[in-house]
Image 1 (spheres, one colour):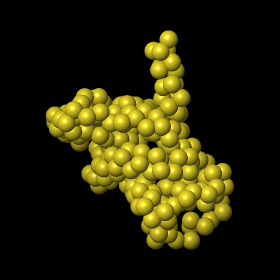
Image 2 (cartoon, helix red, strand yellow):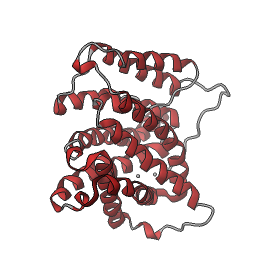
Image 3 (cartoon, one colour):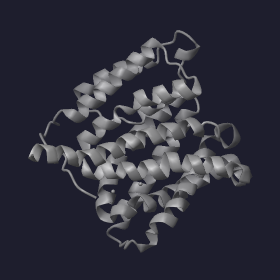
Image 4 (cartoon, one colour):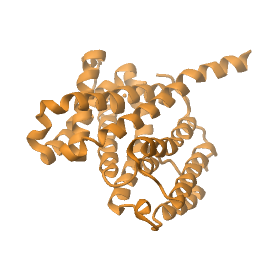
Length: 285
């Protein structure tokens, strides 16, 4: 009976993470349509700004009691959220969706690094048009990986402090951070009303909905469990890229993604050197 109850408690957070990944991949395939119009920087600025405005209406984040002691975890969460999104979209400009997602969901240590390096080496194999990967794009994807690791850490802290308002508050900070980059790149094109419907759909699918769902999983699951679930996203990204963007990965790139997924699962599923298990908390972009 207890085992059944324990398993049933996992249904909601695990289901939330799964739905989050699906929403992000669907939104990312649509987001690429904005790139020729406003660039990756403009697309990121639009989606975060619209997501922040949408969530402000729904969650009313001004109700939060932000003090001098709690403001910095919130700023850190918003800054990491903005930087993660910007670098991910910069990567998405030039490399397949599945590869960009692979690098944006990294959490490895020690022995698993070797497997990840092998995977990256396979991803860099050249053998045809589909197999060529842009090194700048990969660099941005790896930066997104760093910010994703920080996102798990600071997101859990901010979620414990601000609960259900965390996502809305963090999105506002992220939008303020990224908006200058979007304006510098796209200028007045960001204000084109013709872009609003598409940008709003992208904002909901890639920011407002998935980050709210992720926060449910992030604050109710151990960090390792959350990391294992998110490690499955590269395969989902490759599938959506193939179905909707005609992005075909070569055999070696698929093997490389598999190696990095294995490294990620190994890193989050095995104990760290200190033998500590991340604490599970319950509370929330």
